[in-house]
Image (cartoon, rainbow, N blue to C red; front, side, top):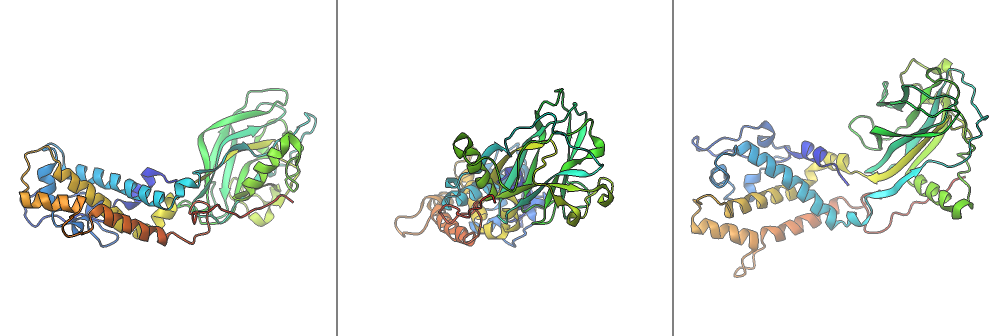
Length: 383
C-alpha cells in the first residue's frame, strides 16, 4: 500500500520539536527534527512533552536526536496505517492483479521479424488512477540465437533519457523462448517524483543491438487472447488488466530516432500483430507513497498525535528512576486512558476522531487504491 522508507523520508520534517529554553537541557540538533513543514510541533500536543522530560525518561546512553528520529519514523508509519485501516483500504486488495503473462500464444520458429534498425517494443499507458503501480518483474525473450547484454530501454514521454535500462542475456538456442527474472523490477507509476504524471511509457530495444532475429508470436493486441481457451481465463485476465493499464506493440523507424534518447511519440506507430519477441510478467498493485507525500499536510494532525502518544507512553513507563511528580504522572495517565470523572476524551479517542476527519479528506477520489468502501467498477473490454 505504501513504501515505509519513502513515507518516512518525506514526512520526517512534517512537524518539528521545540527545544527547551533551559540551556542545560540537551538540544535537538537534527535539522529534520527541528524543521516543521506544517508549522506545527509535537510539543504542542501535550504540556509534558518537553525535551527535559524526554531526556530524563530515555536510556542515559541514547542520544536525544536518535531517540526522537526513531519515535517520529515509527509514529509516521503507525498513523498512516491506522488511517488506511479506517478507510478499509486493506479490504481492497493491495494486489489488484497478481503476476500474469501479458499474453499467450504460439510462435512458429520460422515466423521471424526482419530488422531494419528501428526501435521496437510496447507502448504502456497507465489509467489515471492515484496509487496504481504496474510492476514488471520478468521479461520474456524469443530470438533465433541467444542474446548477450541486450539493452531493454524504459522511456517516458516527459524524459529525454531512459528512466531505466535492463540488460538481458539469454542462453537457450534454436529459437527457444526464455523468461528472465529482473534483479531490479520495472515499476511504472502514474504519479512519480522521477517523471511527469500521465504521459506514456515505451519499453523495447533497438534492432541494431540484437543478434539474429526476433520471433513473432501469433497474437493480435486489438482482439486480445482467445475468448474460449482454458475456460476464458486468459480473456478475463486481459480485461482485468485493461482496467488499469494498456500495452500496445509499437515501432519507431530509424529515420525518426535520436540515438538512444526518447523519440517523438508522434512517430511511434502501432503494430498490434507483432510482439517483436517480447513478453512481460506484470503485477498491478497499490502504492500510495507519492500521493500521501504530496498531500502530507492533511496527515499532520494524526501523525503529531500518534508520535505524542508514543513518547508520553515512554515517559510514563520509563524504567529509569522517574523524576515525574505524581501530579504529572496522573496527568499523562488521564491523557492516555481518559478521565471517567470528567468524561474527557483521551488522546486515543481524539486520534480516532482525527482519523475519521483525515479519511474524509481522501474521499471522492477516482482510484481503486482509495476506495469509497465499494468495489472499483470501471470496466474495459478488448476490441
